[in-house]
Length: 263
Ligand code: C8R
Figure (cartoon, rainbow, N blue to C red):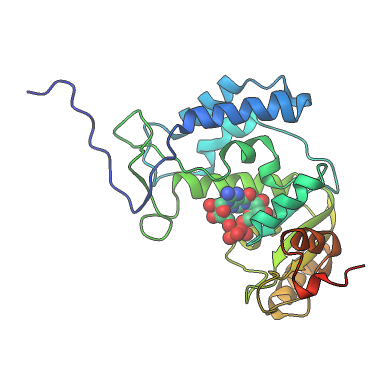
């Protein structure tokens, strides 16, 4: 008779929780609120991480709903100034390089909640009060309503709902669909912009410097985006290879022929 048998965790197709998840999230919370954005130093990181664990632990990681993350979302509320929201799709690295330089701009990962978990994996288990470091549900192979997908959909929705003024999106022109209806941006964010608060969406379509050019502002996927926004009474503008971001690409790839004559 084994008295202290470890619970049998369910086996999923995706990678398990990032090792030291709790400590990483707690450390990032303190770094963000105490060092990076001292105006948020009143936030209680112990409580925030407690709410995170409370949302995730002892639950079926395939049975998540928006409500599961509401207490966490309340504790991490934060105002992004009007005109400073940057969405992105298939251009995460470049978007973050841009906001690193342009510190007043915010992607979701430049807000507290996005910053805490960017790049991490996490899930719990219905039969255990621990995180599952072995495996987590995969969106395709296991279930769509999993711990992480529901998190990103829920916080992306809130990020878009809170946007105001002129908002920007950085799209990747090297994908055949620079605007992809199935992406978080195309599925969640554009439909949650409030037309009474958001006047204009400005798209910047950037080609990967190495890749062939396959989409631009005149491409059909961008037209789809344009008509969705026009139906929602939000103005739309589009610019391909926006100079400030082109400069960032050229810092990384100064010898590329397209970087020779930018001045
Ligand atoms: N957003 C969505 N997903 C995010 C994310 C984020 O901020 N941050 C991370 N790490 N992820 P993609 P998209 C993870 O296809 O679908 C918001 C998630 O696992 O290149 O259009 C953000 O505000 C997610 O499945 O982009 C941004 O504007 C992939 O990365 C869009 O949504 C998303 O990769 C981006 O989502």
